[in-house]
Amino acid sequence: MTTTADATDPKIATIHTVYAAFGRGDLTEILEHVTDDVDWAAESTLPNAPWHGPHHGKEELPAFFGGLAETLETLEFTPLAFTSNETDVMVVVRYVVRSRSTGRTATMNLHHWWRFRDGLISRYRGAEDSAATAAILVP
Image 1: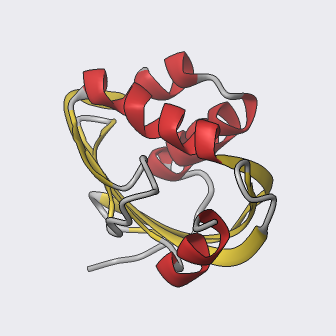
Image 2: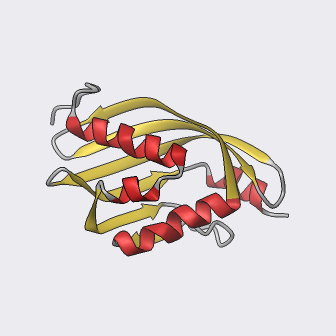
């Protein structure tokens, strides 16, 4: 398996586009880069984190992004490292957020795993520091 951090990799370029759309709150742009049957999930399953858990298909992605936006204010989202192979892209992201309900902040590294099929994102898995997330969400 070959890996690369080459920003000319079209899969990495797609992830840059998706991250820029996330920063603008542009769900329409994000949906243009996923398959109709996308398998999207945050690995954690905290009950008070509405974006956690599985989301299947484009029609369920608004719940993921809506839950995230309603619950957290993103203060920093900085991709730190990219690597890719024939089908996947892995990214480490520095993430700083504030809970909209408690006002507390957390700083963590997110780990994103993106799988592609026919040039589109077909699978996403995101891992975060769930203890830090719980600490800022619980009143």
